[in-house]
Length: 293
Image (cartoon, rainbow, N blue to C red; front, side, top):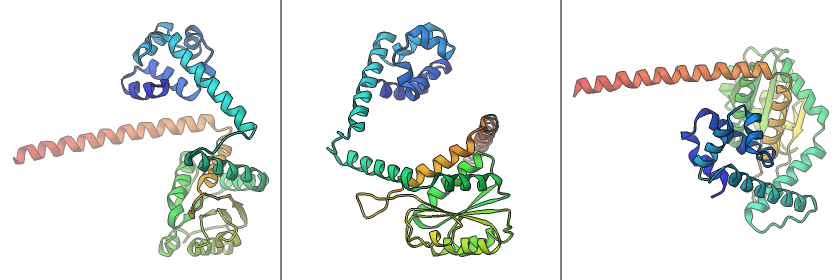
């Protein structure tokens, strides 16, 4: 069993300091590979003894045994990276074939999506009084993910389904200070395209995140980002579009570390408070059921 699987299985029962070690190994194992136990402890601000006990807790005789496995993984990754760079990766199974196709989509994204267009879109989102993310069909959940992440950045955003009535209600008070983002993953997105056309007439900025130039959204948005979507099946790939969304989110996040940390703390406090209220409600319900029996 590799160290990652051992960590996953042991994680719930680890102490906070041991979880800190686990997180570092899972997220930055290449940095940890050539650290001694004392170096790792110093880097993470924990005791050397905690590092040793952590290795033992997940099934190793000590930290040296764990470190050897991590170094072995890094060696394998470096070999794979060399083969990848040299074009020697063999599509020996379907999983590899699919990921290679996704790599092609990302490479096409780098070559074909103008960086200045993405920057203009990011600047528009940052300056918007209100943001509306509109989508329909299979891309709706991806659009909601994008809207949620924008909310976590503190931006005033609302996710709207492609339903005409929902769009009309959401865009009722649309102004020229607002931005409407239409997300389309096919040639069929008439409602979303209509919403962007309406927004343009109101003077709002419009952004189209699409996977094909044939999408009606691409024909009406003032800023259009076409995300390559070739796949091994009849269904287009979501990979590049999700990656472009993530790139935009990271661009928006740059220079906002303190603000984001504060928002995350607020979210966590709200979540804990909500869980407590739910627990109180379940306890009250349990008592009520017990009394009625």
